Picture 1: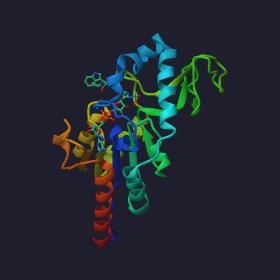
Picture 2 (picture 1 turned 60 degrees about the vertical axis):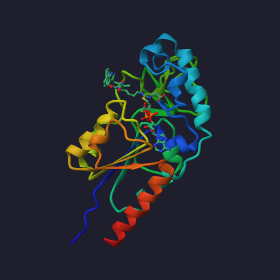
Picture 3 (picture 1 turned 90 degrees about the vertical axis):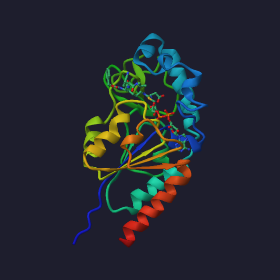
Picture 4 (picture 1 turned 135 degrees about the vertical axis):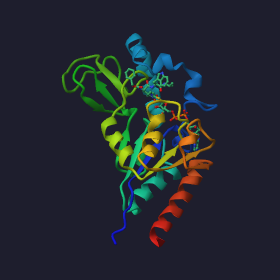
Length: 239
Ligand code: BV8
């Protein structure tokens, strides 16, 4: 009889990039400890002071371009290569470490640091260089309308139609390195679980979402995820 391999949906947050040296948002070294969210990550802040917000993300871009994937990212790439079912990555991260690790099927629901979007025509500009209020949209040639393609608080997430289908059709939901504080991503485990998925949480500590996870694997994802993937793939092979 044909074996069924349930689809896997993996939600990642800043914690998966921590062992690549990138600061998380709400940890002791958190990004939000050094600046107020309201000053950089809201659409009002951008309209109030676009230069400041552009500077913040240009600075972050110069950091993220240097970062390299860690064993947690590579474990997901291995799972995608060796597991016969679909493995989709829904990431809250704006870094491109999943791409650098060779992963596919990546949905950046909070945007991407190496992209800017034109508020006039919607064109997406891929660029690791600085984007400023002077940048001219290469598509509609309007100056001063480029915004970092980062989903600010109060803005809708990207790829939500696709993500909703992935959550409702996955048989396994894995959360890695997210505090489960930011919505609607914090509610994804509930959707997956209510649609029959087995749910796993990988984090240094139990999060407020703990109730919805069948298993909680505590520890640094760079250690726990490769071990989980090894055991999971062996079980798939040996039946
Ligand atoms: C929206 C962009 C609809 C900037 C980000 C009241 C209740 C509920 C919701 C709301 C509310 N008031 C407002 C809202 C909605 C709001 C929200 O959720 N607010 C929260 C804070 C209360 N959400 C929104 O506005 C979203 N949009 O709802 O749209 C709408 C539309 C129009 C009008 C109205 C509504 C938009 C949310 C996206 C905001 N943008 N980022 C940037 O990235 O610079 S959010 C920001 O948080 C990042 O994207 C980040 O990815 C995300 C989540 O953070 P985490 O990834 O979880 O990171 P964190 O530091 O928190 O945690 C790291 C975890 O890793 C920790 O648990 C740690 O233990 C663990 N860890 C650390 N090291 C390791 C590790 N784990 C394993 N191994 C390790 N080594």
